[in-house]
Length: 143
Image 1: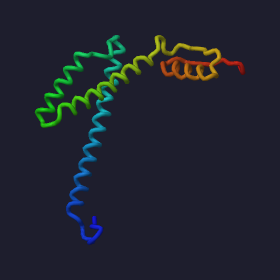
Image 2 (image 1 turned 45 degrees about the horizontal axis):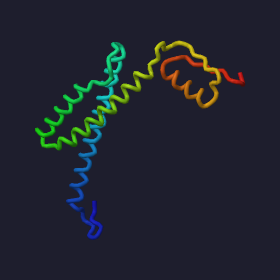
Image 3 (image 1 turned 60 degrees about the vertical axis):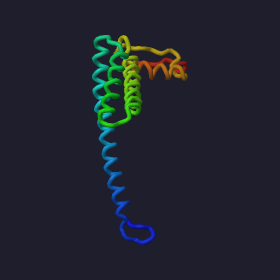
């Protein structure tokens, strides 16, 4: 890097660039960890579905938040920040779990015929039933 006025490399700018590259690498690792976490959540969803277990377990979440706050204090981070972060992660996990469980039909693989399926509501229902694992056909005035 060169200084705009004099031309020689600016040590502060070089150090700043190196620090930013390190932060970018850490951010990349954080994304990879969130992906790995989501893969585990998907396994939890499958287990909950198989055994009819509820998505939301408030006591477990509060215990986790308490532990994250304690850990944050121990390592010198803001406990409120960590709580906000983990509440957001857990909320998203609940939303995804609920959506995945709700998508599962009561009889996946069954055949459904949508009469009047070419309209907006028919297209919506087709998408929803297909997403739940049903084989869907439509019948409309052109048929």
